[in-house]
Length: 95
Length: 95
Image (cartoon, rainbow over all chains, first blue to last red; front, side, top):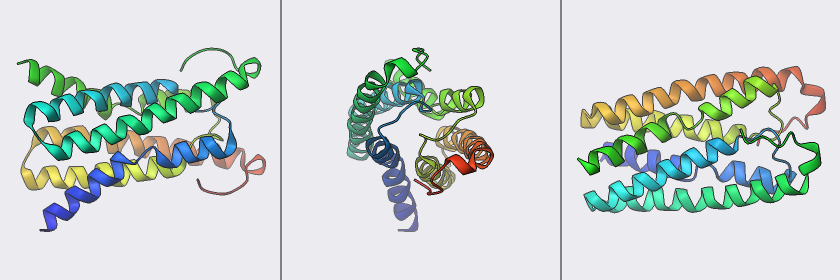
């Protein structure tokens, strides 16, 4: 039972881990210090976890990482939108 | 075998997911747009995953999340250091 609670808390915290970052991007409309590569790396990684979950037929791995990928797609979309709006003030490099 | 490769790629990408962000923080020495809450949420979440891994005696879950927690402690340390250096230009709120 205790193990179940720790696993659930772990899954919830990491699945929704980028929500505070998305909210902050939305509020400040500034993304200069944020690493786009970290978003891309996590979205590819969580997509692989989702595929891995389908192979294992594990609904927890599928749903936790599937939701995570959706949040990351929103994060990448917001990043590109706000980076585009402030393009001239940026160095133009992806990092 | 294919499943093993996908699982390994997934674990590597998410374990080292915050490395590009840490490198960017170190290079730009600016953290204004970064969400500290995302770092804290992932570090607590990955700590729970590590405990969960010990219960399951699963060395992959333990090592992947243990390394992730170390990277996040470095990220939080850098964030607090650079935020402290630029304290006057910040709003002072944790988000």
